[in-house]
Length: 220
Image (cartoon, rainbow, N blue to C red; front, top):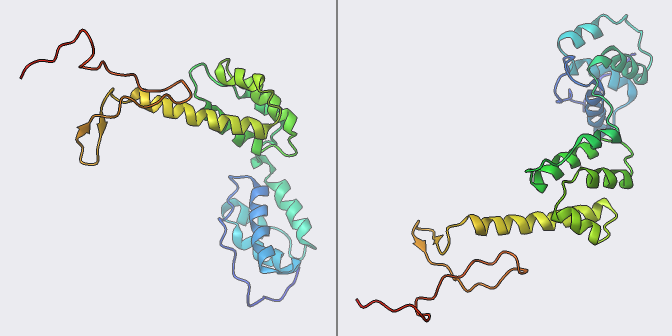
């Protein structure tokens, strides 16, 4: 396919394809680059071999001269030739394999679930929701979702974010040494033990008042 060189077009700077990754992902990256440049289809074909290397480059050089009539044809030939390296198509059944472990935090469960769900085309919200709930371990968070009649993934993720935030705050207060905090100079100082309870769950425990009944003040 013949096409005059366009002076404003630079060789695409995308990573060269070497037959070790998904060919369709390479085509998508290439097309995005060329669409931005506003070039014609003939130019797409002309610059495409510059994005190949190794086995892929040798394959292109072996194509008979004048055998490519359109970029769509080149697209099909390239995708078919390296189809063995295509990533498997994700389907909703893959979500069923993601289960929250007995000792796994909610944060570490949500992240891989969202990553997997994001790779499934046309995933219905209800399917995503059902798999998320099914994969949750039994516990207070799952109980709260049922109690609040949560029905959508947007609601689930909002609840998860709030639960993770509260859990991490409470965990931080429990892990700290009772009655001590470290200032910027590295010295430990007493913290206010009369802090109010946070939602009735994670307030710091109070120390005994040295002036309380039953305890005498020692003389210096």
